[in-house]
Image 1 (tube, rainbow, N blue to C red):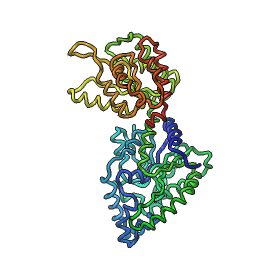
Image 2 (image 1 turned 90 degrees about the horizontal axis):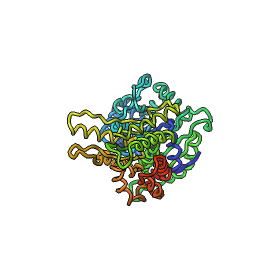
Image 3 (image 1 turned 180 degrees about the vertical axis):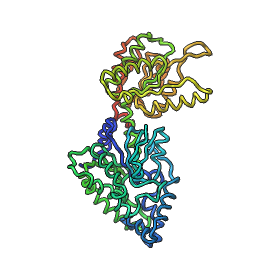
Image 4 (image 1 turned 30 degrees about the vertical axis):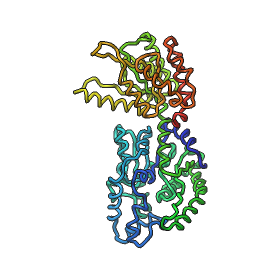
Length: 493
């Protein structure tokens, strides 16, 4: 295996995510990017008390052991973990992007609770495993399992921290090793947040070396994002020493990349941890592009006949499933019902055992204490609909106005369009159906290059604006736009 580009990683790993074969392994760099200290920062004061220079130390695990040996207890080390990893950092965008991915297995060597916070913000239930006993039961209806193989800040006295802990890992935490070995046999892992200064990396990969007994060619592909060695700035203290270390790290770089090939790991090299955020964002966009949100409502069907509109929506729902996409719907009046029926019929024809995943439905409730409660709940549902998808199709979009007794443009559909733009969706209105869809098209028409990049979609929209075209012609135009835009182009917009 070898160094690969970000584009290769995105193309290949997104397929694993969509096939439910993906897992993440999170290293210390993800927490450093959120504001926590790295290992050197954690142990700096302790090294000073030991009359050592933490910047000159290569084995930081051994340094933690020296502190334990000096006092024959780890209370100061435990206190440092609590002080540094409990409340100091703020949630990063990278953590938020991770929580949005439909990945149900995460491994980490970090002690902090940033991932748990990110999943809570994403309204997902996380089953945390940080002790051996946790592996003996499963939290029902959880969205993701988080394996904190080195422990948790809230139980610092049990954290894997000193050399004794690493050497006794199999005796005390062997069940984690067994579970990790099982995941490695079939899941496609992406290792995030590792660098050459992360003391865990050698321990993690030496453990992998013992676990991966079969030849690499028989194992699933794996990927690692590593930060390149960082050159010191001129004028900093001990510049000459830091420059010499940087030079050594650069020389080791190609050898480290080649060595990871023994574990079937391809490497993407980045200069800053901030690049990981962009990779995760693009990965989310790639994965979400396989889910299509159909937005719309119809109190009345003009300028399209009702039977044609219902036939169009039903066929569209079926084609979404038939072409390998998922349908996301909020049960919009007069539109969603036909789409859902078509999608469900196609899923049944395919005898899919995962209809619940192919049809993701978020019905809007109708009973509220007051209008403020309604607005709040509707806003939350709309955000969920958009977050679960990457393509938005807008059909009709009108509602009954009690004040005038007439049908007016549905403001809810316009709100969903605003959210879709905010989340970088491929937005496809069907202007021929009138209402909000026509208004959305009027906004987008002068900005097609901005909305669709280099993809030429004028001919497709010339079909979608024409109410005399058949529903089949509209459907082909919609999927041609999706195909032309392309997932990678979409992710790079």
